[in-house]
Image (cartoon, rainbow, N blue to C red; front, top):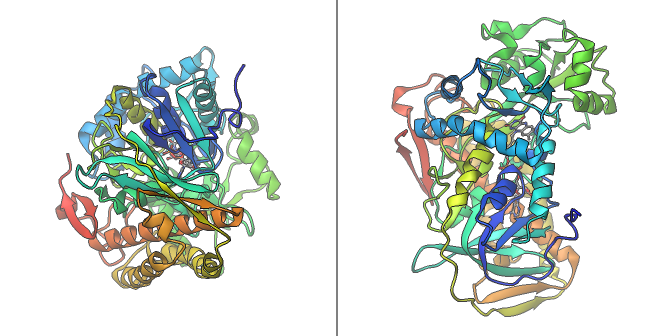
Length: 557
Ligand SMILES: Cc1cc2nc3c(=O)[nH]c(=O)nc-3n(C[C@H](O)[C@H](O)[C@H](O)COP(=O)(O)OP(=O)(O)OC[C@H]3O[C@@H](n4cnc5c(N)ncnc54)[C@H](O)[C@@H]3O)c2cc1C
């Protein structure tokens, strides 16, 4: 019998663990499964196990496994999309291990669509060959569901759901990561472990318009940066050209695969305007199509969207490939068989992240990062569609080799009981105000088109918010809890306040890092476009590296 996620959740924390995995998307789940089975693993996730971007992935997962294709072609396409900033060794590693990752998923029972007895593959923008495997338009859900079932079968993995990682625990002498503090069941405690793996996904919530789920608040990058890890290429954010744009509706993603299957991107008059900007029209790389829409809309009055017309695709094909898109559009009053879908760009994928090597090691011993949180070097300045789920799996598989130095001593902690915190209550309006204002500011300043003046103005505002937030009384147990202390809360409201505060601190920190990185890079490339430096420059064929408040250029490997 398969246990449900609820029945398998750990109720009592017993230190220490061998490994803590933070996040239960494709990266975290697969990592937990790949780790040696004799390790005691804590899988911490801030919502339910399946909540995350992975569950929402629609289009599919790329792998050059058909006889007409080859890893060499996949490598070339990835490098081209990455606009000169991919690390070749990482890209080779990704494309060469794609087949193994797919076979592992198929063996576990992921039901990819088939054509006859073969795996079906579709073409997506900027891929030279059809190589995107899919399970209708809910590929991510198919993968996450299967991985979750497998995790639940494993007795060495303890699941802590509704548990929020707040701060990393670095040994001050050895400079090694030895665990983290977590908010779980009205308590903040330190969990000790030989290794911590950050798999917290992206940070799209920093933008007012995003396809990302609410959990994508950049926590992993913020925690790692505050702990002193090197983070990289944070100015590069991919804007998906086609998110549903209707008042009140979420920015639901209309997958790239729709254009791959033949849908047209049109203006209000039905004209395919994307060809005015690039010879490949709607199948040009994402940043080009997003900017084309952005520029086109800038020139129009009172128009906030363009349209995606599915009618050039055969009706049966639409039904077979895009049942979820049909369903969601229907919910918002759009019949995709009769009318085009209103769309506009939205923040979608963060290419930058915590700098790691091919073994997922960060610059801090004992700390690892995988999935969207990591910067492995495979995406460069712009991710090739459907490479991110693949990256989650290929790199997480490396953790089967992880050698953990298990912690030897457990620090005894003194528990501080916090009764109904009136001061926190009074501080909440200020936090909520920042939480609401920040995404608009970042959309306008570090969105599809950037320039020095708006970036500097935004940095000034965000720096003030950083200071304000960090001085609040509610922030102290999040940021400054001593390893000798733990906190017990008496009421649920305080737990909710702490969660909101911790996410807001993280969003403001990543906003600061993105803005400063965008200001630092005085050129345009991939997902980073500067109006005042509209061309790419050879001098900038470098990574942007950040540690604490230092920015510098790093070589491409
Ligand atoms: C709508 C949409 C469609 C997409 N379609 C595709 C596609 O077709 N193909 C493709 O390759 N890619 C696609 N992507 C991108 C891809 O889905 C993501 O890059 C990938 O799933 C990231 O996986 P992850 O495991 O790194 O993060 P996620 O799946 O986002 O998981 C992050 C996990 O971390 C948890 N978490 C976060 N912070 C904390 C914290 N402080 N404490 C505890 N837990 C925490 C979250 O709750 C969540 O469980 C899509 C993305 C979106 C948003």
